[in-house]
Figure (cartoon, rainbow, N blue to C red):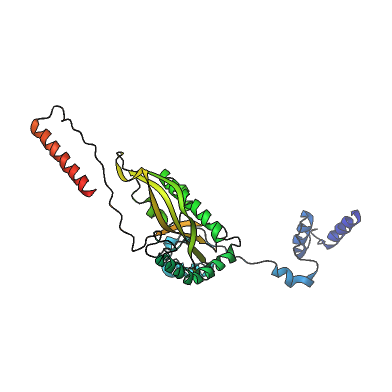
Length: 335
C-alpha cells in the first residue's frame, strides 16, 4: 500500500507544470477525486449470462393515485379507471343471496279416502279402500327407494314412530310458545300457520293414546331449481285420542275441553332436504280432506253476575241485565 501511494505522488510531481508547480487543467479534477476517496456502488452483476432472466424477476407496478377522489372524475374517466383495475360496474338492482330450506307446499298431495277411520276392513267400503291404496303404492315405493339412496337406514315402520314423536314435540313446543325450538321441528312454511293468532292465548293440549298405529301412506320426491337439489315428503296417518282447550287472555274458554277426549284422524306431511347432509325430518303441513265437515267457530264464555251493580240507578241496572240476557241467549243459540 505504501509503494502504491509513493508511486502516485511521483506521478503527480511529474505532471506538474515546471513554472507554477500546478497540474495540467485536464488532470486537476482527477487529482481532487483521488484525494477525497470516493466509493462507487457496483450494481452490475459480474456475470451477464442470465441478464434476461434477472430482468424478468422485476414487475413494473402501476401505483394508483391515492389522492384522486371519485367525485372529481367524469363518467368516462371512471369507466377508464374501472377497466384498468378490472372492476365490473355496479348493477342498478341489489341481489341478495337466499337459501331454500323447504318447498312452498305439498307436491302431489295425498287424497284421503272418504270415510277413513270409520269403516272396517271387513266391510265392502273398507275393502275397496285397501285395493285403491295398493294401486297407488307404486309411486310411493319408488320415492322410498330414492330416499334410501341418501338415507340407507330409512324404514317406513321406524319412521312412523319417529314421526309421531316429532308430531307430539311440535304441539308441546307450540303450547309452550318456544319460537326458537319450534323452528327446528317444523319447516319455514308451517311455522307462520302454527303461530297465527296464538298471541294472548293459553293452549292446553295432551296426547292420550293411539287408536291405530301410525303408518306411512304416501311418499314423493322432487327437485327444486337443479336436479341435484332433492326434497322428500312423506305423509303419515295418525289416528289418536287427544284433548285440546284454548283460553283467551281473560281466561275464558274459547274452544275444546281439558276433560273430554276427542278422536282425531290426521294426515301429516313431513319433509326433508335430502341434498343437505345435515337435513332432518320436519313437520311441513296437515292435509285436510274436502269431505271433512267444517269446524265450529270458537265460543267465548262469559261470567254472569246476578247481583246488580252497587250504587247504580234502577234504569242502568235494568240495562245491564238486558245486555247480559242477550249475551246469554246468543251463547245458547250458537251452542
